[in-house]
Image (cartoon, rainbow, N blue to C red; front, side, top):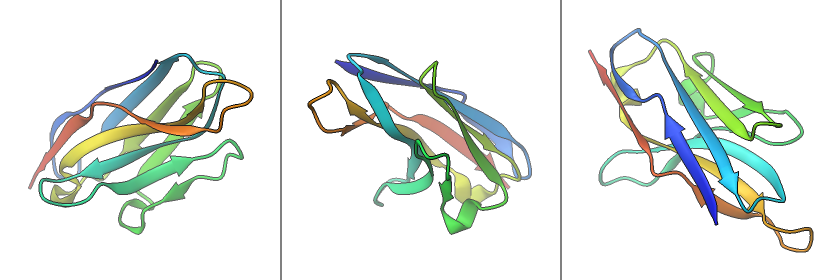
Length: 121
């Protein structure tokens, strides 16, 4: 089993900051990409930020310059620093990790349960 546990969500006023954290644990041989996605009711889950093993982060256009993703490869964690929050950032944020469970198995996506971020204007 692979578990992803998120923390750090909450409520904040527009212009404020929050930091999300996610830790992967369980039957893990290696992790490729780790990242954050978000979803609002009735809409699809969208990529917010991804950080592959090559260290080249990719961000959604809507969060560039405001959000920063980072990883601790040894601890198997990924963080999302969110600054300059806007009301439209309100969503449930999910952590994702592409995990290989053995040297012969391909990486598969695993998701955290999600953490609510609410930004009031």
